[in-house]
Image (cartoon, rainbow, N blue to C red):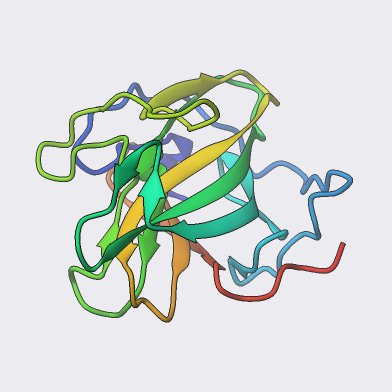
Length: 186
């Protein structure tokens, strides 16, 4: 696993923080079940990376978000996610730790709207509860918030993806949640 340190997200510098080996899977009451070891899940499953676990709590598609109407042919996808630091050290988190994919083409993905897609600059949140472009989780800290993405209005497949990145430049495992699948049984 590439030296055990967390690396950078696309388009943004990171402070490299030491991380421990994978912690024991933690299943919180009401958070669904632990996902299979293949790194895939559905809303309600808890997936665990080398640095944090995450659970997609809810998914909603809409034409407007925080008073803004999506550009023609697009819509907003709001994904409520709970993220939990599973290490004994602080972990710096970024909205770009997550992307949404809707196809297999090289441009069939989007990062949250809290990062400028062309410059990589952090943008302000537009609503209460929206996760910011960057935040820090203390050891074992948990945070729930909303990630907002612009996606094609006619997308018939949507998945939330997270790929581990290590300080030595290597990529680790990829974790994917099928956002249009029925939620996990609780």
